Length: 107
Image (cartoon, rainbow, N blue to C red; front, side, top):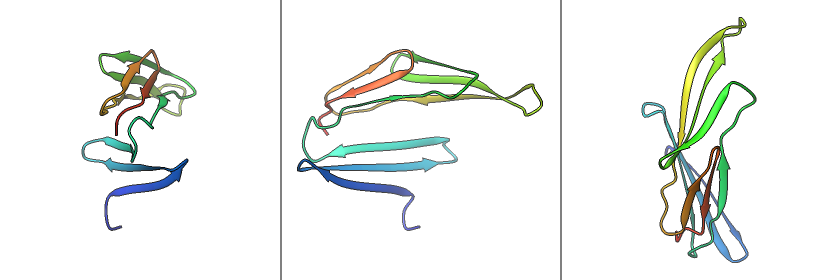
């Protein structure tokens, strides 16, 4: 591996799009960067869910998922907490109970 970043680039309707993903075990973080070569071309929604035993909610500028895994013996196992935050250039970011929407950021 030459870098710790996974990248994909593609062209659609004359617009170049890029996705970059970086994972840091020590920081317990996954960072994803979406870009396009024309302003206002990225709009998407993202949610966090799983089949069972969780709660997702919006708090300030983050989407938060908390839950407890099963221990394999019909009891409670590990508690977990996941946070999702969008940082964009221009456009709007909105949160609701289990969804984040990014509309037309400039980069």
